[in-house]
Image 1 (cartoon, rainbow, N blue to C red):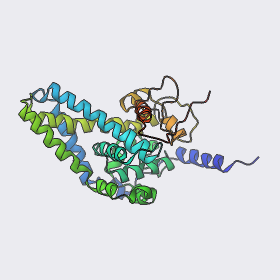
Image 2: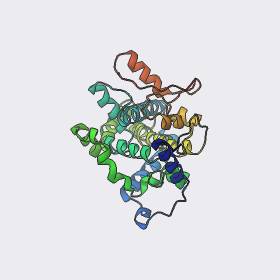
Image 3: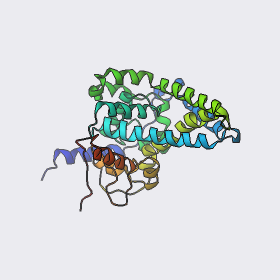
Image 4: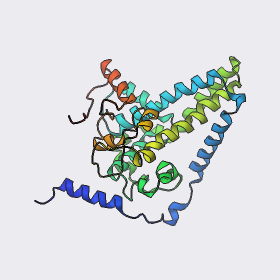
Length: 299
């Protein structure tokens, strides 16, 4: 019996994943000055935040709250709601979740969603912009420091978002969100006479928080395509990695996600803790989200 189209496609995908990777063309080897400089500044700021002079309980609390806000904005807002449309939310809640995700400074919502949808079309193939078969460092973060052809495909993959002027504005000006946040933190730190002052709060809540969130979310691109177990025979390198799932609020159940991309639930087995899914359940119980798509592990 001849293979079905889907089976043939899976076979072609597996062949692409197994292909030897050619060196990057000269144009892609050059570093992007803006992105590379920004990442360097954030990492240097994160190191300074850890100096004893900037430590305070208030700084730790501010970082913890903003870590929850930012990671949930990425996992629940940008990823499960916007990129995969795994549930519907009223406009006020959708806007709030997307703003939370934009605080992660991982580009604006349109670019983020477009690149993620592109990744799912070509996961671990040579034209995947964070192709794990090119190496862990490339998949983790090096890809964003170079020109990637996938950016040219963002407009055709995000027609549903391009029509929204709010998303278009946020896609261009997402970095501005850090300024009022930093100003409020600095003013509170100075007025409350926090140890380390306003600068300490800013360093913990912006560069240190961003760097931690960066590496946690980047681990989904790198670690979960290298280590862990597989519940499903998806035609890529995706794995379920428990420690990435804990850090990233459930995104580490990556093999499950690649098997059922539109599911709002990523942890499908009883021991696969999915914090983002628990937030979806809470929002559904409150009547704030509907049409929730939920995959279940086969009995």
